[in-house]
Length: 231
Length: 244
Image (cartoon, rainbow over all chains, first blue to last red; front, top):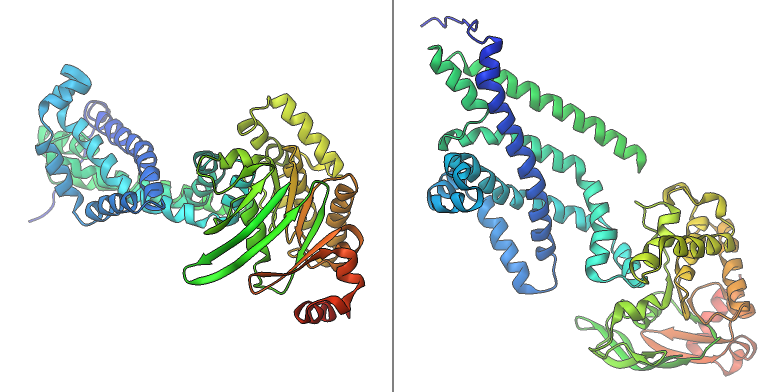
């Protein structure tokens, strides 16, 4: 079986009609998940480091559960379990029409928050105890001390790791294929179907994911080097 | 001004403070000394409730720290504290270090807090460094900024927890100078320190601790001037640190 490689169908029109909307959604999903996931993950990390045992336990169950289930299954479960009415409620007719896309955003945020929370937990613990004392000593409340003293430092210390996790997240967004959301991969697959090249199209798709992820990794590496100099 | 009444504290089953009682009056300069592990740093951290106590009570300017109704952040905002490792906020400039709590805790305006902060920075002789970050300053300079940060809050008392222990020897002097000046101006101070020269010259009261207990609580004139009246443990300590 010779692979008759012919990618000539990938014209500018196809890129514009099929690939760019998919890429746009994949990036959107990545960025929204990163922002919401880091916020939610930070809250979970604070719960996990709280002095109240019941808060610790809730956070631990959340993190351990999500980290023990394959992402693909979480995507499917959320898609099947959240009723259509919910999407109609949050985004009206648009929400109903784009149910897979909305479902993916919610799923990824909740799933990735578990991973981000572990990163933020390490970040918070990397801030010396003396900093917390110093915050309290000038009269800050717990929340002021966290917001103004600990979290900015934790975030800065963990920035390279958070971004690396985000690159992994970008690659994982291709799993929304399973629920039919129109992402970058789906864009390639759709184009492949239209022009009857369903197999070859996976090659340029992989190449694009590689170029994007690899360039971002290089950027993170440079950022890491710069942060190290600042410290 | 500060009444420490029969306080005890445990870490798990290990007792770090045993029935400590002392009083610090307005204008007092109190030096807390003793061998390492004797509970000096723990004692000073209980005064602004950074370390909770399990027994006894501390009353700071009429406010009990163990009363559940006490607003601890508010109490702490009136008590200045200087740490062994400076603990300036490394992600903020010197100016921001000086103004942050004034704005966020005391509710002062930006201008007001900047004015106050710069005055204190000038006082410790570091005005030229206002736009730098803590990491760009030497240890001695950082500690002076830390003192300025605490003074910016207009505290009623200053707590020093081994302020010179983490410094290179040639930087100890500049920090002690600031502290001496502060003492001469009448600031109420409680200092955990091994600087016996400072204790002798500036303090009016010495607390000597050993194994979590206050062993000596007397005027500094007596502590240094009448060694024969001291407990054997204090005598031993003094003989070790004064012979060099």
